[in-house]
Structure formats: structure tokens, C-alpha cells
Amino acid sequence: MSVSVTTTSGDTISVSVGGSTSVSFTKTTSTVSVTSPSTSTISVSNQGPKGDTGATGATGATGATGAAPLTNGVNNRIVTASGTDSLNAESTLTFDGSDLTIDGSIVNDGGGDLTGFGLVGTSALTQFRGIELDLDSPMVSGPDIKLINSNANDAAPELIFQKTATGADDDELGIIRFKGDNESNTAHTYSAIRATIADATVDEEAGKLELRVAEYDGTVTTGILIDGDTNADGEVDVTIGAGAASTTAIAGELTLGVDLAVSHGGTGASTLTADGVLFGNGTSAISAVDLSTNGNIIVGGATPAVVTGANLAGSGLAATTGDGTLVLAVETLNQDTSGTAAIATTVTAADESSDTTCFPLFVTAATGNLGPKTGTNLAFNSSTGDLTVGGVITAKQYHYINANFFDDIATALHYIPLGAPISEQAVDGSSYTDFICPCNLKVLSIELQLPAAVTGGGDITMTVLKSDVGAAVGTKSAVEAETLTMTSDNDNDQLHFLFDNAALTAKQAMAISIQSDTDLSTNQHWFVTVVIEMDWSTRNSGSSAVITS
Image 1 (cartoon, one colour):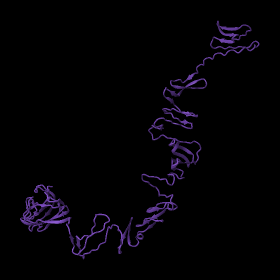
Image 2 (cartoon, rainbow, N blue to C red; image 1 turned 90 degrees about the horizontal axis):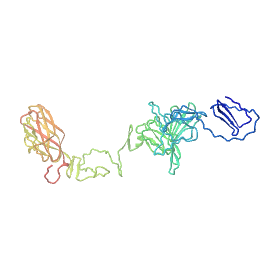
Image 3 (cartoon, rainbow, N blue to C red; image 1 turned 30 degrees about the horizontal axis):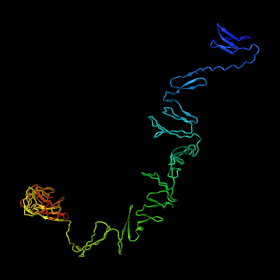
């Protein structure tokens, strides 16, 4: 509805529509009121002459701002402005009262701090354009940075340092510094890993990696340098240490794939060939010598040199060379010498059998540099072979026991008559069968001559037996037995029974039994000799006493 009203008198103009007041103008308050309907158009035209400007009316109260329209509204979505007069509930940005979930990137493009992160989910912080990212932890340990890949493939997480500007030689690509406070609480770099571009040429790209540590005065110095700028495909150079006095310790084996190059020994040899030796004094050129000839050795001096075995021997020595060996032998000496000589290992001796009185040399200890001595109570006649001893010989000596007998031994067990009666004995422990050992002894052998008339053949067994002090002499145990087989053709032949270790100790009673498995003859003469080794150093040399063990 459009209404145009002009008036020249009166204070109020009212316009009624349908019997109700819709618009009213009041002169004194300069107020235009619209009461109904809610949407109307009022047009006021200046039909008469323009009146004087009235006084400025009072400012009316500010009305309430209407709510801006909201789109995509869902619980927990964070609302952002969309344009100047509308709102949007973001589907990729939610907060449930404890967790803030961002399905996208977090971009810090200003100079402020990005702090207070808890768990960051599957989304990535793909861009951080600040100068510094600080992870500050007040805890006992940490903070920790973990790169975790839970995929089952063979790919691993990566920590990438990348410069996107045009590269040039010696550009730094990344540095990892390890810092801490010194004793004055001043921060200092103690070690670092530095990566640079060694060669930025297209298709010839090469890198360099340095492992650095702070040395004596705190200067961070490269200790290991890995350089790929070698101008050779597949080759990388490594430099270890800093300074000529630095040392490199290798706990295990050092395996070289090529000849050993000597870089700091002067201008001499640079490789070591087979059967060669390198030597130098630290300042002059390295020299290589050939030791492939048998007997050649190096002799030290201002100028070490190879010397042959023959030249080393000179006069008075004989040189015998072999593969890796050199033996120098002293030729016959024909002059007097004085002083302390080395211990001789061999001497040259001549056969001398004409001197009737000789004195053997002896020393007073088993080892050491000792002077030779002689004694008048120890003499030797080289002409006759007689050895004269003024004392007792306490050593192992051979001894024998004659035990001949006359009897028919048939097949029963008999005992050799060590007490030398006229016949063998059928019972052990008699006064004819036992021999009391005066010292440690061993039965070495038994010699048995068969009778003149042997009527059969079979096995004859000789057994050495023993019993201890205090035991019944008739209850002996076997020490060792030997068996020989003979025939009826062995009349007057001898049987040699050799024992391996038929040993007895001092004070034991010894007996020797003989037994044949067949009847060899009638009553005949049997000739027996027992050969024993006696160790008189073990004899009983104590006072007279009753011995029970």
C-alpha cells in the first residue's frame, strides 16, 4: 500500500487502514510510527515549500541484532564465519569436550607459538612455517619424538631434511646438534651431524656427511667425514680422525680389499707386495724390501737392509737356510775363552777308552747356570768300564731270581719255588713260594726252559700275584698274566714271558704261578729265571719296627 499525505495545519496525521491506525506522524516528537502491518512502504513527498530545519531529535535505543543463519549444524562441530553474515559448522573440525579432532593440516603461518599438543591422530602436521619448533618437557625424561609405521610392508618412516632452493656446492642440507650446559651453566654444542651438498652438478650429484664432536678447547671438529664427491661411480671416501696425533682403535679385524697404500711416509713405496716388508723412521721415505729368498733377514740401522744368511754368519759360523728358517752353527773352537758362557745344549765328544781314572762331572742343582764339579767317591775307569761308587746306589737295578724245580706239573695250578727248593709247590703261601718285596719292583719277564722230553702241546700261563701286609699270604690277587702256546716239538726250547706292568710295592708278598691246560710230560727238570727291576730308592729305611700296613 502506498499513501501520500500533505497537511498545512495540525500536530498529528493519522492514516487508518481497515479501521485501525497504521501510520501516525506527530509534530512535537517528529516521530513516524508504523504499527501494522509488519511490512509496509512509506513514501513522504515534499509538496509544499520547504520549512526551516528543526532541532535534532534524541538518538533512539539500539535494537537487538538478529541471529545469523547457520549451515551444516551437527553436534560437536566448531562454527566458523562464512562471509559477513552467515555461519558454518565445520565437518573437519570437532571438539567433544576433551579431544580436538582436525581432519586436515595444521598450518602455523605466523610468528606465534604452537603449544599444548596431546594426541595427533591420522592427520599430519604437513606445514610449519615458523622459525623454531620447541618441545619442552618438565618431566624426568623426554620429550621424545617417535616415528611409527604400523603398516605390514617393508617401508619405514623417514626423517627428511630438505632445502627447496636452487642447490650449490657446500650448501648445508641439515644439522643435528647435541647441546648441553657446561660447568658454568653455559649452553654448548658437544657433538653434531652435518650433511652438505658436495657436488650439485646435474647427474653428478654427490653428498657429504660429517660426524663432529667438541674437542680439547670446545671447538666442534669433524672426526669422521664420508665424502661421495670422488668422481667415480660406486666409490665413497672416508676420513677418520682429526690431527696427526689422533689415534684410531679397531677392536676386530681390518680387512683390505686392495693393497695397503702408505700416504704419509714420504715419497717412497706406496704398496706392499708379496713377501715384502715396509719400513721407515717416520720422516723419510717408506722403503720396501724383498724377503722371498730363503735365509734373508733385515738388519736394523740408520738405513735398514736385507742381509743373507751367509753374510750374517761371516767367519766362525755356518749358516743353514730354509723356507722361513735360518740356523747359525758355531764352528769348532780352537782358542781359550773366558767369562760366563751361555748354557750349552750340545757338546761334541770323542770316544776315549784308555784313561783308567776318570771323574764324572756333576752339578749341585737340576737347573741354572752352575759350575761343574767332581768327587773322589765317584770314579770311572774308561779302559775297563768300571764305575766306582763310595756310597750306596739308590736307583732302579735289574735283579733275577733262580727258581728251577723237578716235577710233573700236569694240569693243576702250581707255584714257582721262589725260595729255591727242589720242586714246585701246589699250595700258595708256603715258605718256598713267597718273596717279600724289599722295595718297589716290577717283574719284567720270566724265562722258562722246557724239559728234554715233552710229550704233548698246549698253553702254559705264568701269573704274577701279590698280597698286602696283614693279609693271609695264601689269598693273593693276580697282578698280570701271560700265556704262551707250545708243542711236543719244543723239547729244550725256551719260553719268554714278557710282562707289561707287573708292578708291586715294598712290603708286599709276591708269588708266581704256573699252569698248563694239558699234561706236557712226566716228572722232569724245569728251569726258571725271573727277571725283575728293583727301585732301591723306595726301600724301607726306617728304624726297626712292627709293620702293619
